[in-house]
Image 1 (cartoon, rainbow, N blue to C red):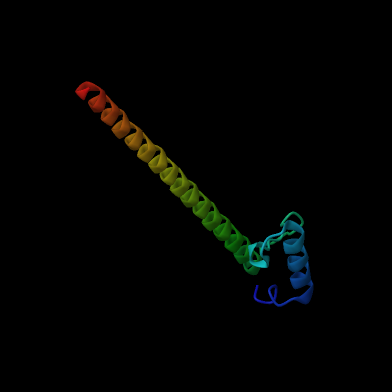
Image 2 (image 1 turned 90 degrees about the vertical axis):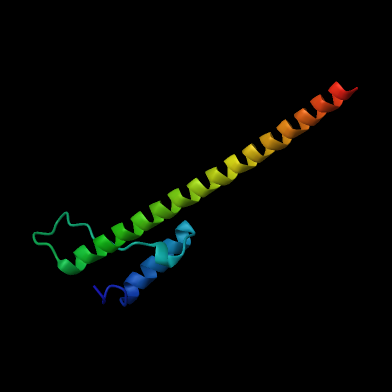
Length: 98
């Protein structure tokens, strides 16, 4: 597994892939297709598991960010409602006193 990350051909492919997709090279996940393999290779299994782990972390980050955006949006809306409600009460109080 450790030789995969040192292989110059792999580095070139990772760099080119990152450039084509416009993403950082550390976001290019290395995996091997087992379609023609007769036996599993622990080193390759680890690459697949590392890729899966990274995908799960990215998904979790995305969900956390979406949740924070939603919370911030609802706070802004709630804040605007409170200001509008307070203004409506002030207008109502002012009109009663006239």
